[in-house]
Length: 220
Image (cartoon, rainbow, N blue to C red; front, side, top):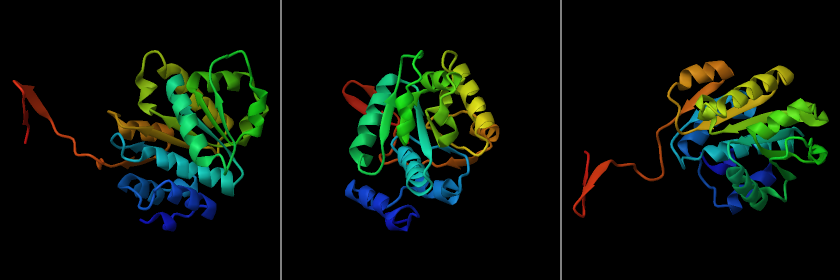
């Protein structure tokens, strides 16, 4: 699928073309056909560097530019939050307002009401929900990056409670889970009430081999 065929605002298409996006990767096309632009929940399970983040960006562009919604992008680590913030600011600062909200769980960050895309950790968003911030009802899409961390003994419980809380508070919210490593994708998709998008395409072939004495013997 050519980028020009994607049904989002023309200014979004122009921005993506400037970034070098011309053809969609397999998982991106599958996500669109699975209801990405119809507001359906999606669980995207594809290899690293296969294009999962652009799926989330498509959703954000749709919700913000066409529907006037607010999008929250949840990541597990502060370092990753900082990186996503830098990347998204570089690409989309001309299209919508982007904020980073991390740490300081005692602060409700009232300034966030003025931003369209908010990048945060699950712990921070959990804190914001407990502060009953007024803009919560404006959230129309939540992206959960590295959603397999639901199985993590330290972060998993907070993330699980957070997703459950958001679904109760925002019955119409679209949830998009992204991961390269989920052992039980079908079960997780059922829990999220999501369409499952699975693909094995990767930009660089993955080979297994044994290195010994200066040589690598690859497994056929």
